[in-house]
Each structure stands twice: as C-alpha cells, then as structure tokens.
Image (cartoon, rainbow, N blue to C red; front, top):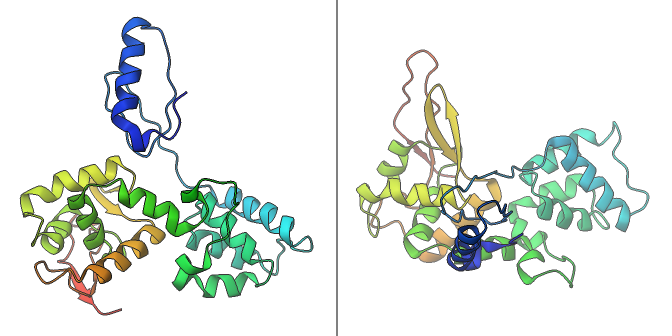
Length: 255
C-alpha cells in the first residue's frame, strides 16, 4: 500500500511501475488526491460521507467532549444541515464537534461563514495539514501549479456550480488563455478539487463549499479580477433547461 501519494506522485508512480514490471500479478493500493497515471490504474473516488454516516461521526466525536450530547428529534434537522454545510467531510465534522463542547449545533452552524477560524483544534499528534480545515485545504492548494491555483480562485465565484462555457466566459483572461481553461479544469478534476456532475447528458462542475470559500479568500487576497471577468462578484450559471437542454448566460450578482 502506498499512502498519501499526492506530494510525491511522480516518485510513487515510478515505484509502482517498477514493481509491476517485475511482478505483473502484484496489486497495489495507493491513496492520493491525484491519480498516478500509470497503465492499468483504476481510480476509485472516495465521496463525502453519507448523511447518516456524517451524523454518526458528529455524534460520536461530540459525545467524547460533551457526554450529554445526543442527536434527537429536537435537533436532528439542525445536525443534518450542519453536516451538509460541512460538505460531510470527516475532518470538518470532527473539528466542528469539538466546538459543541461550548456551542450549540445552531451556534456552530451560524459561525460557518468564518469556518476557517472556527474549525481548528485537531489532535496535536495529527499531521500539520490535518489539524485545521484551513491547513487541509492549504495542503491541496500548494500542490497545485500556479495556473491551477488561479483557475481555482476564479471558479470560486460560481455559487451554484458551472459548465465549461461559463468557466471559459468568466475565468479566461489575465494569466489564463481561453483555450487553456479546459485543460486546467481537467487537472483540477483529476486532483479532486473540482467535482464533475452529469445532468441531461451534459457535464457540469462544482466546488465543495469549503473549497469554494477558500478560493474566494485567495481571490480577494490576490486582487485578481482586473484581467478577467470574475472581478469581485458572484456568478450563477443556471442548470440546463429540461426541455431545451440549454441554459442562460452566467448572471452576475453581488453577495
């Protein structure tokens, strides 16, 4: 087994290829945010937790720090919403559960607009990038090439997902030629930063909310937007019409 290959993906790919060349029947399990790209590789995407698994994880971690905590009829809807707002990501749920020592479920949910300040306090024995939500996404961001980071930042203006046409219309510009948007988008999909969703035979894409908020912060810090269409607004790229299979042009709003 090769674990956490993303920061040494090339070396892991070379090692796996060398092992397979002398032992063709060998099976290698590799965990990584990025595919290794070697012949015969099969990719199994690990999705966010199911709603019930997310609720169970939050309950287990919360009772460890607040034994009286329970998920009941009175708070189940709030707990479900909180887990959904955390993208049902295990680390985010664990960090949020620590806050339930002091705050109610609703109070934690209300503070998610500043989630990177809120979701800290992971185990001191964990790896640095597994102690805070920001640290986790910093890790992924730093593994991206500069052009990939730039597209990530710009894609964060889409609050409700987007298609390729919208990405090209909004994100192309200073630093990203329009004809390179597809290749950069594909690389972000490979790295699990952008999630593809197929609807009515057309591919659309989205960012998990934590990933999107991180990109918005980076976009604001960079002052980017003067050379592309994204600026400081938020865009909505509507889902295709069920009857026509077409959508409208991206609409811009201030949020």
